Length: 474
Image (cartoon, rainbow, N blue to C red; front, side):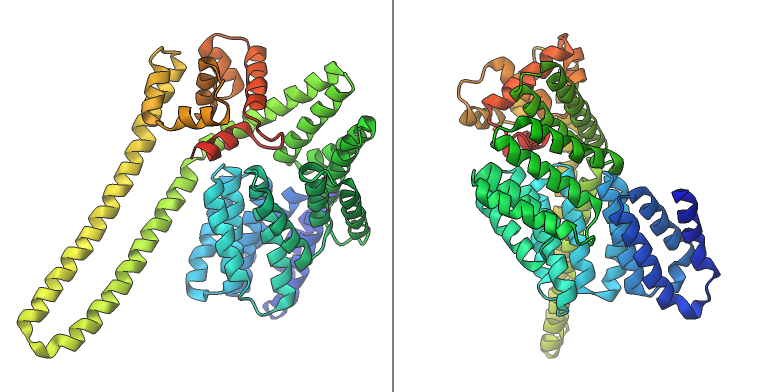
């Protein structure tokens, strides 16, 4: 029945006259908000795409760009990163004409979320920082505060994944201060439970989160985060059965919303809780689900690694073009100033200008070519040696990534050669099953080895192994 209602809503705007476009826009935004609030992300996405296809001409520039950004946001929530980048590119191109700070801040924020999903943590932080700087310039407080809350919360996720605890608390505090909600309260409760072991403060924010959610203003997704924080709280109090109950409630919501990363994180927490009560069967079931989703996400992210690389290259190219444009302006001023000196001097300046411009272009092309060669040749060669289980693999890997071994040994100097080689396989993005196939070992053996290696490297339980090792060694 719900799908029939959504289909009706999709078609309803087509019957309205162009004179009522503002009312249409407000009405449709409410429908999209309600769908997202109820966790119906697929339906919200379908509605956004329908409006873009059939009604984009009836929207003003800012409304259309906002719709592109909202579509990119939903796709990011569904872990469809490549499609999300496509819609954000449309928004960025459109804003070159509009030059709206709010639009640009939202675009950079969504870029940051996508980069984080792909494991480009530093790039994500750069985009969030730029986004926050732009958002602080917004004069309308009703727009500014919720946006800053969203951006600080999103950047805090990266600081938590990279174990930057002081920065994590600062961003969580700024987020909650700007616009208190269930999500922000839940994240603060987790911070005080996991990083401070201050259960009284954690309980305070859990209660704040419940109060916020009871208002009915916040999406069901935030309830799943609150339940997970409750689970951590009771796990810390060693009430493991109660923790499991909260984790299961959170997991049910995440499964309904089709949020694989949240499902993965909750299965990891369930594994730890079941281990605490010596329920090995259920612990192994949760670990199996966690590993399966983790491998799947790593595989999907690996397939679209070229997407952020292309975007980074476009950003660099845009920076070069901007420098060239500014340089040309400067040259014009100089030429106008010295025109009276004579044709000879003008000719020399012009020639110098062209030479320097060509040098900039050549340098940029050389850097681009160098990046492509590094990405394509060395990486492909090392991957093939790994697949062949070649005895030359470890030596060649260290040539391509010379700091890899020393950085890992700095974390734990007692790592065995076999653990270093396993780390190399993980760094290259191989899934558990692939590693088992290529090294002629059982899948269960590789899973146990990965789990033991995670403990020896003291990797946080919430962190994805592949993303952690790439961030640490980048």
